[in-house]
Image 1: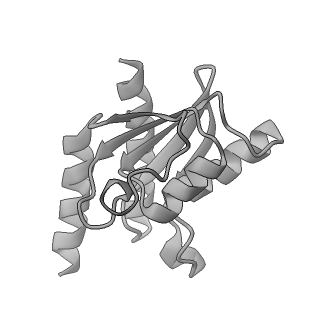
Image 2: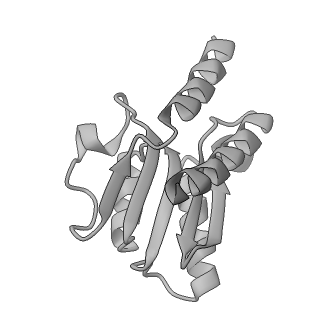
Length: 143
């Protein structure tokens, strides 16, 4: 139930990205039941290929905690992280990763299944249908 609650917050971030013409992926980072970082894709807005939702959320959470390690935190993201984001999640030593839809084209599990920190717990498929539909609709409208 808690995972769904926070994934709904990540989906709200994804809707912000969608409203800005960005790929609709959103993320939140939670510590002790409180959201300490939020992010959504900003790659088009910032003209920065690294401005993924996860990267925005990690930066916000690190600033909130005044530290780079997020060992006691959970990252909720609507779509499976890419390899770049998985690397950042690993470097932050994120305690837990919860994602919605799998990404068979760019997801870390396809290209670098061992990219995460060994202690990071992973939960997949939380509200995956909602996240997947948002992505499908976005790309269908782009073509």
